[in-house]
Figure: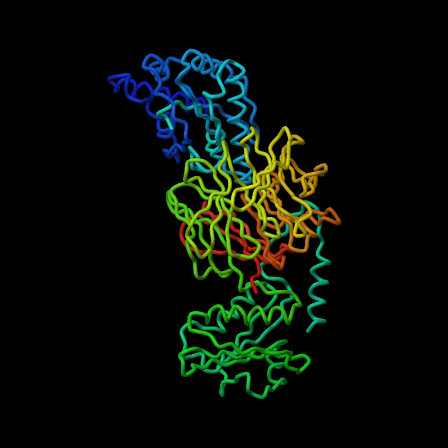
Length: 182
Length: 423
């Protein structure tokens, strides 16, 4: 399911890229793109915190939107009740750390999410821990503390609203978002 | 009557409280006290149906069976002479007779008397003079009186509950009577609302709202629609729990990294850190005596329930051991048992841990239970669950035998919190 979803996102990203004329537009929300395909998915509005960074530099923004660039991928997925960054996402986190290093003026919001099972309050804490684990790795790889904020949406903003393991797997997720994307 | 109740309680105690055993819900308890509630004299001319509310309250508790009565001519009242043999032949153990009359000033005079049919003696009665809008509350008071006289425990029919309703993209924090009537919106938002918690005097509610795009803890007066920020720090601010004296709240904050426990005053002052663990600490709850804080932590590798001295000094002790996912601790009002949510196979079910015997009893057969909340007399546990894809509230008796589904209104209902006794 995860692989299928990734392919869908990639194809839609391609479609989006083809319709955008300039790089000066803020990048469309990754969440919106990912949310369109898939049964039961809805475009959940992105919560934000007071994290007012400068817009991503035009040259950087292009990389963020280029479906052939790893930087266009923003999501890390988890097993139930787990928050460790899986090995398969390490190249992704490394790429974004490099981007943060090379674009010192930009900022990132990491939103941690969980599936609907268990305690809402524990899921707030678990989502926070997921986001913090991504943040910690980005800091170790050269991102700056004042560039990155980690927040939790718990189980409150599911990308997939259906029930069952496919939807749950989509919702156990951290998203790395840049200004204009949340 | 007391002897009958003692027998009833004994039979409940004898119910095998086997660890990890799911008990099939059979509806009401096997032995319920049969009570006859005769329509009050003069009631037919009134709209709200006082005796119907008394009857519904007592039935809902699972401890009473309200008898079906034929039309009684002449209609008896609390002033009538009681023919005990007649009521005994109707198989009533207890009898409620009463009257309602409109006074010259427009207020209502409601009188009733409770009788022990087995002992053939009156137990007691009360007269109330109330405006029309308090007739419903008066009915709950009568049910409380009957409940307390016949069981020896406080009734909770006059209490209120709080819960969150999700209608489409809209979230509402609602307060209602324990029977779901008189719903009153505290907060309406397009962002999630979580974890309502009643202040010990029932006048205020603490809760978590995402209205500013992240979880922040607020306190609000029931009667005043004004939010007061309690905790708005970097990261997540969540899981408010009142100290029994109402002087402070325990909260879970991630301002220093992972979610940890803190104490804070209801006005947001005097923040102090309670836990310093490497893992997640959240869902704090004070024990009724205020000595302990129970909470959820994954410090041992999986989420389990722990407790620590509320003073903050002293080691945390692990409380749950069976299973790999035990969360949402709630201490019973008598401090003797702990309700929580456990992962049982692939299901998330409400369970009760006897803190003395260490036995665990699974209370439901549902898939996704959340947010248990004790009635203030400890007899029932209100929780959120999912039926047919929809969030509903369910009230299960603390012996697991009686389940009442609270269908309140359309939409998903969740995050219930049972308010305190206020009289």
